[in-house]
Length: 202
Image (cartoon, rainbow, N blue to C red):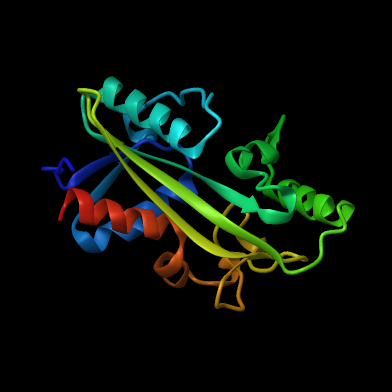
């Protein structure tokens, strides 16, 4: 495992919600975060069919463009009754000609569950794969996940993405009903970032 020497970290994402979560999770450990927008980085095409493959594309593109180690996240929700969909296509389900609409994406997930006659509980999980890439081509991988279920109708106004329909195992609130601190203690991204911190700063 290769250690990071700097406490300043380039995070290769243009997603404001993800960036805010990563920044909040790393701040207590003395790690400051620079987002892709601050470096005017382009978004590379995510052409892989796995979270790992797409995270590698983003991390290595940012490391090559800046000459700095770069951390990238690819994540999504897997719904068991939909054979793991939307999975790596979690964001794609939200794409419209006017930008991403996660209300539409969540509605699609619910409608497909109903169309299949899937009995509740609708078990699901959020997965996150972090890749830390260096300019020399080396990378380290840190997976994370949180088990739970999806519910309908959606609940809560916090968070982002599919948070309003996901209830983590052992809890009654959706991610969107929790405040940021509550969510960040148990989320898939927190799981992956804890592995990253132990691996690269341990």
